[in-house]
Length: 185
Image (cartoon, rainbow, N blue to C red; front, side, top):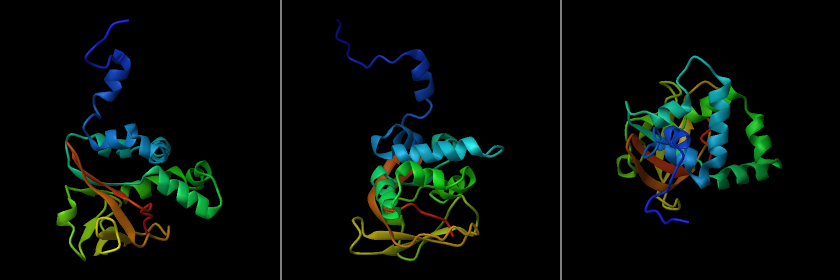
C-alpha cells in the first residue's frame, strides 16, 4: 500500500469527468443530493434528438446560466404525495416532457439571489413566454419563491417553489436549490 496526496482516477473516467468539473453539470450529475434529477435529465437527453442536450447547457463553457436544482427529497415527497415511487414519477413523463421541465429550470445569464427582486420575471430556456416570477416570501428559507407562468406545454405549472439554498457558484453560472419541480404551464 502507498499513500498518495491526490485521488488516483483511471484515465478513462478522468476524461469523462474533466469537462464538467467546476460547472453546473458537476453539481447535478455528481451530487449525491441530485441523483433523481440526473436520472430525469438523462431520460430527457436520451429521448430527444437534434437539439442541445440539457447536460450540454449545464456543462458549456460558452455561456452563463442560472439553474434551479431539485434535490432528491423533493422527488421523494412528490412521488409519495402521488402514492407512487420516484421511478414511477420519472416514468410518468415522456422524454420530451422532461426536456420541457428542465428547460424551465434554466435561465440565460447569472442571477444571484440578490438580483432577483420581488416581481422579477426570469425568461427560461423553454421559450420566450415561459417565465419564473419571483415573489418575496418571509416564510421561505431564502425569502423568495418562484411561480411558473407563460409557456404552452399544458403541463399545469408550479406555484410558490421556495428557494432553499442560494448562489451555488460555478464557472458557467450560478445555481439555486428549489423545493418543488418547476413544471411549465
